[in-house]
Length: 367
Image (tube, rainbow, N blue to C red):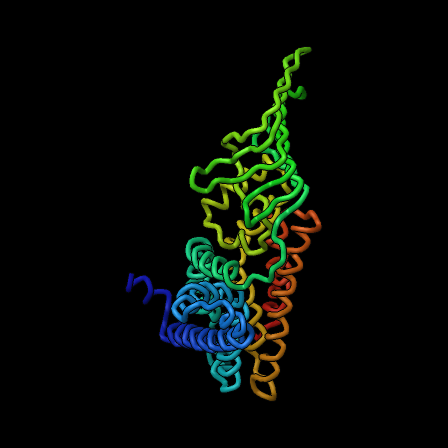
C-alpha cells in the first residue's frame, strides 16, 4: 500500500492533502460551534419549558442535530475550505511553480481528488448508515418536547393495504390512536366481496392489533348478499400503523435504509402520495455526497488564479455559489415532491447544473 501511495503521491501531493484536510476539519469545527450556539439561542425557551435534562439535550437532541446539519452544510464547508487554502497558495505564488514544472492542471488536481474521495466516502457512509439513526434521536426529542400543539393527523385518508384491500378513515386522533368513520373494502378483481363499516377503530399498542367498535359487515357472493350488525368490539390485524395517519415532515430522514425500502414498497401499493418523498430521500442519500467532487472542481478552478485583494473575492463568490447550490438542491426537492418530477432525475439536477459550470471553469483555469 505504501509503495502504491509513494508511486502516485509525491511530496507536493501530501502537502496539498494535509492543507486540504486540515482546513476542512478546522472549518468543520467552526461551523459546529456556530450552529450549536445559534440553535441554543433559538430553542432555549423550549428546553426550559420541556423540563428535559442536560443529558437528554446533549446526548439525544444535539447527538442528532450536529451530524444532520454538518452533513447538510458539508458542501459549503468543503467549498470554503478549498477556497481558503487554494487562494492562499495562489496568493503566495505556490501554484505557479507547480504548473511551470511541466505538471498539467489535471496532475495538479490529483491530491484534491484524493482528499475529496476521502470526504465523499465518509459522507456516503454517514448518509446511509449513521445519520438516519442520529436523526431518530433528534426527531423523537423534537416530537416529545418541541410540540407546537398543532394537529399532526391527516384527514380523509384513502389507503390500499394490498392488492385486494382498501381502507378509508375520515379523521384520526393521534393522541388516542383512534380513527373515526372507518371503511374497509375487499375486491376480487373489480367485484367487491366484503365491506366493513365502523364508527371508530382504535390501535392497541400492546396487542399490536386494531379494534373495531360498533361496526357492520357486508358479504357479497355473486347475487347473494348478507349483512351483519355488531354493537360490540372486535380485534383485527391490519397492515397499517398509527404513524400512517400522521404528518411528520422529518420522519423519512430518521428511517434506516431497510425501513425506508419497506415503506417505499408499501407506498407503491397504498398510493398514499408519499412515494415520491421517500424515493427522493433514498436517492438523495447516495447522490448528495457527489457534491464534494462538483464543488471541489469549482473551488479549485476559481481560486487557483492569483488575483488582487487576496482571498476575499474568491471566498465571497464561492460562498454565494455554494448557497446557490443548496438553494437549487431545495428547489429540486420541491419539484420532485410537489411538482411531480421523477425523484431519480431531481436528485441529480444540482450536480448536473453545477457540474457543467465547474467543467467550464476548469477549462478557463490557469494552465
